[in-house]
Image (cartoon, rainbow, N blue to C red; front, side, top):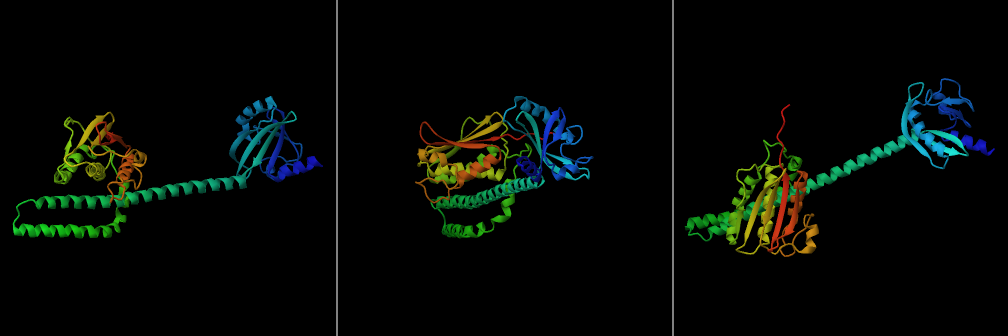
Length: 375
């Protein structure tokens, strides 16, 4: 009675139970599941013999080689074949998984029909993959928007800061009354520009798609030396107003190829961010130096200042979102985060290290572009 229940249970679970008689020849044990007839050209009945792999389940040929090792040891170990698909006599496709085990010195082979279970698992896996891709897409889109917000704030605020410094320098000049009038108009205009920043931020969405664009082509790659010179030219008035110096290192090789993977406008932002940070945390009459070096397949850029350095407790989160110094409030704290995300997307990296003589050293490196090979 117990054997009958067990036999019917296996059949109900769509599991075919076979016992090996000779190599490749198996005896059907118990009640055969209904699906077996769909794969056999002869009538199915209890205790019939099944040839594997010659006739009914050719997929199992290689699997039975491994099965012999399990049966030879005659222990409790089980071995699964993994899922395979096979067509029945009507060319309909089904999915199976086989298991071998030893029971009372008998060599048992179980073949299970997995259609409903397989489809359910496959559907769950597919949904999980889709959810993962959606989640990664949303993270990326959110990251791009945050970076773009910073870029807009940075570009507008940076330009206004440079304009205000130039206007402040003009205050020391011997201007005519008409010149003074124009100067005051300029100051008022910069105030109005600051009021427009929020309106511009509301219209940033059209630029989102451009954030992922950059070039790895040597013919179009940005020149980091040229970018650095332009940043120095832009920020020199700001440094001069505070009796500070901003200059290139003296030993730069002007004949070298300074092109890097990236996008010029965002490379300008990265360099400007690092230089502005150095300016904000450096004392009057100090010097900020930008050094460029060839580093094998990379180009190395370092910004050194003579400021107070980064507190040790801030170093680990320095390049995270909304990280900012406690002694210089008023910034959104996305500058170094933008630098890290941008450089990593281009295959580069960015780091901080304290200078032995005092001050900070922020450095990054970017890969050199590859020349395009013609077809």
